[in-house]
Amino acid sequence: MADLARKRDTAAGLLERAGEAVLDAVIDALDDTEQIPASPTLDPTLWGEEPSRADAVAAEVWASSEMESARASLLGECETREGAADTIGVTAASISNWVDEGDLVALRDGRELRIPKWQIDLDQPRGIVTGIKSVAAAFPSGVVSLSAWVRTPNVNLSNATPLQRMKTGDVDRVVRVAGSIGTW
Image (cartoon, rainbow, N blue to C red; front, side, top):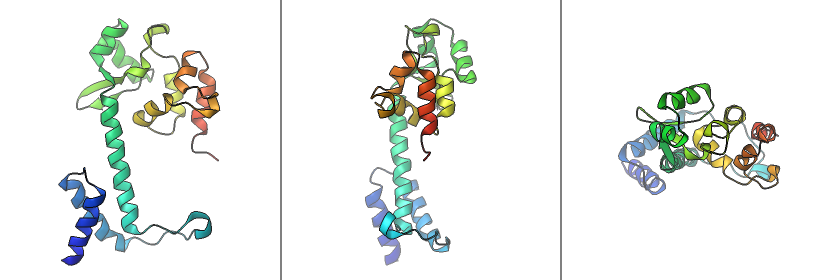
């Protein structure tokens, strides 16, 4: 019982904002970690000490919580499908088609599509940034990470944001940089 209380206290401290269901899942994962085989040994002089199973689970839960927070923040920077259509001057069906074709990326919020506003640019052909489909295909993650990445200055783009480069027609370069993420 003391062991369960210790686990609950540890998990609660790491997951301040998390709900009871997440806390229980962490506790279950901590219980299951004793059955997980050890990972291959890495040189601790290069990589540091291997985290404990509890620390690894806590880090995974923390990362999931951060992604949910980023998703919620991005939803606040989105247009509804109808709102995007009104802004651009097209039908809501056109927005749906562009999402289906990959010309726009979108988040689902329940049954509704949410269009991140960074994609809308009335100075561009069709009122949307050109090259989203190619960049999204090359980018190694989803809409939330892509939305943050395109708006962040990038040293590989002379400190311009990928979005700035896309708007000036340098889509191929942005695609190359996006495709190089996570490669050595």
